[in-house]
Length: 332
Image (tube, rainbow, N blue to C red; front, top):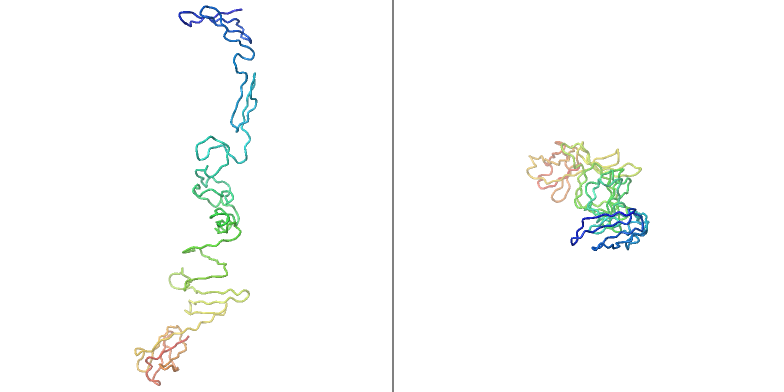
């Protein structure tokens, strides 16, 4: 059965006809077009293998994919799936433009890393080489690894630098050596301690200052004793202290502190003498001191005295003549 189709395709005032030899479109059918003189010309032989020069189709993809079913020669399906990759690698482009590949993530691939994005706990082995310029925000206590020796900051290198650690149990910062096995040395300029307790476990304490101020935080009228206590193991501790109640220095062991002997000295001048009465102001706070007077030639003279109050006394010079220029010593 033959069907004939005509088309209004004009070429040099001629009408072209398309003749379909059969209306059943199955394999091996011949499609013919008429020449200008109405003779037929064969266009193609449509066979089972196709009518062109392509006999198969293949699919080529980058090596991040695995291709199956390629090539196709007659019929079939080509499948492409992502290929297995090395662990801990990621598909991406580094800090310069390029074709994405699977690569190990480096610090240059991270524009910034907020601490809020860090889950779990962080220590020196988890973020060993991330520059501090990449880190933003605050690393809080809940993100610190628990324990007494968990380093989160490496100073210099692991072979020569130190580590800063955080003890979550005691809330203490600790400065450790390069491998974290022991404490490291610390040298600072001015050092301020704001807490209420300072414990020094070193066996040698060198202080360049020639004065040590105790009880420096006290203001107002004095009420607190202050001094130095010496630990003596199983024996009673020894003390040297200032007794604020008696205004005297004391020394001894626990429960048996004795007043320290103090001495005051001065030179007798005419203004200290009224008649034959010599007044000595010693300011020792003691009404029973020991008085010694030394003449200008070095001879020691003893005088009976009368305590005017706890800080001054008088004696009579009538038996020795003028004592002007003599030196007095009061102990008590």
